[in-house]
Length: 389
Image (cartoon, rainbow, N blue to C red; front, top):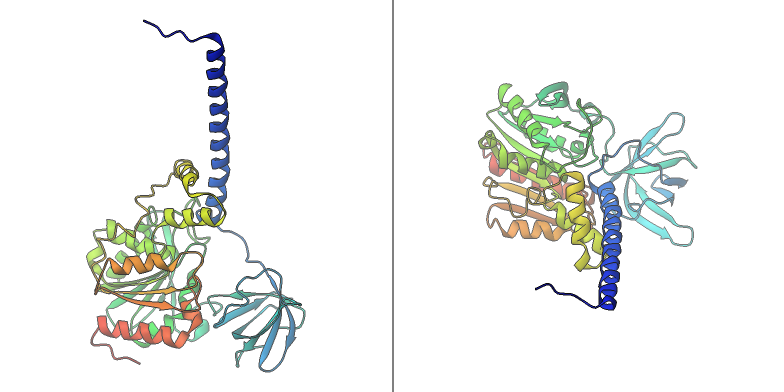
């Protein structure tokens, strides 16, 4: 028997089906657009020079005053570098915020002694890495070396030391090797050789530039660096990663046969769950919770992402060695509670430092002395023969 509906009811059902189809297409189109915006903010490669979003309006022996042109970090306390690009260019260092003039949108910060003064009126920018150049610029002997990765020869800095345990640095998304300059002096004082990496998608690296994949495809480059270290005198290594670099090292531990060569791990603001990070961003943008799944679903298929693979918060069985973790409480890129939950899953294994007043990978900047003391003490603990400085 076949159900035959009255003509009027058939017309209503057809109109309803058309409306559903229109809404589905509209939802898919909107989700495609939102997924593109989310990708631009997370996995799309960063290129070009960083913007100069400050103007120097006053300089004294102890202070520098800036007018903000959009730099959200200008009011963040701590030690920062200042770069300007006039005819000669230059570099200085500033400390904590001293005064804020809300009406003029001006911020006065402490001037760090021993650094030149920027010219009045020059455009400048804050630099989180606090040091320009390379290890030679901070008084450390180093060599430019390359290590052979799947996509070709990757440039790296090698800072020699007296020990057979090497520290391998992996920078974060859109960053560069200078990220390591803040802590290299502490590592070098303890006699530890250091290999500071570039890896795929870096401007200096060979191979096609595609997109950041948060360790899913980058981990073989870490494996290649560990292999290089073991082939050049290292007996084991300590992995030191920032942000995406930290979870790329976790991916290495998940996948590589060389994971047993890792003595310890140091992480700074690790991006432990990309899915959750993006979902929170969608929520902050006002997208209701019940509909966030659709742009995330579109994003995964459009960009070839496997959210499960990128969930290091719950795929962490590989972490069995002593670990040091820093995370800024005011991190608005990777919420500190991800690290809170990660540490809770590894009772007794992770030494955890939650740094008040610090944003994303800004824990050193907030209090260099405290950060370096914790780092030196941890290294002394995992390498008992090394005396603290």
